[in-house]
Image (cartoon, rainbow, N blue to C red; front, side):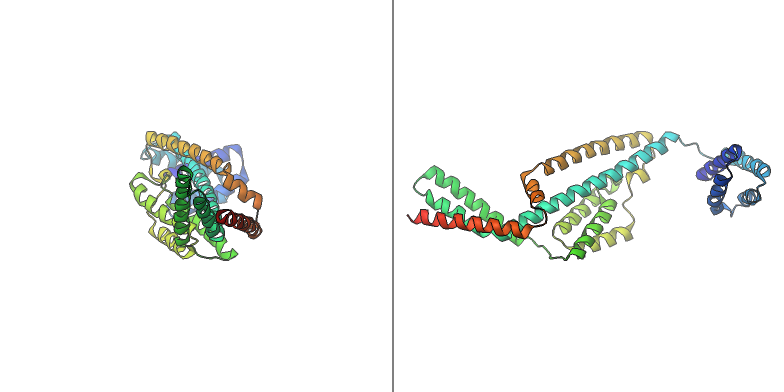
Length: 300
């Protein structure tokens, strides 16, 4: 009823302003309410350009129904719209962060698969080189064992191979699912549930598990339970608090994005461009030479 009354008030204004084209546009929107006899009569008058009669009927309808209509603070609608925009921005920046983190993860995984064994062997030889120098030996041993464990962990991570079309589909489905289940934008009563789903979604995305991302998205779309805060909060102070919280979250996200883009790993990836094969081939050749040199040094 609230929207209907507002639409009728808009029509009154258009009639007074003699905006014939805008009146026609509003009449089309008004037809969805034409099951009501009074509204159907108003629509008929407007289609006939019987504006005087339509104006009288509109005023009568508004006056008879407005006393039954619960007044809603217009600031609430503005706050809801502001919150909705912040939720969209949050999803946008959060998705960008997830995609950058995935890019770094993919690069780290490729680096480990291509070069991990050579680097581990280099670290082992450095450790042996310092076997008569206890402080340096212990430090080198710590570096070797730590890196060896990293290589083992990285190699054991599940990671699916996708073609270019599948990679695009993965990104699209991930973004769509993230809009629904991001824990910072859903209503409080669903926050914990959303957080668990979002973690599963991010892990599946990082592992290139298109099948699991698809399954999560299907469940989210069929479930229809994770409503955004802007859809369920109606109290002014709650809306203001939610806006303040999301504004803070967005500020943190911007800082995190800036930090990622300023990292050496990210700068390296950007400088390489799409030629990862060439980069790792050159680096592998360079490390192989270093390994051979170390072998000769240790033997001596």
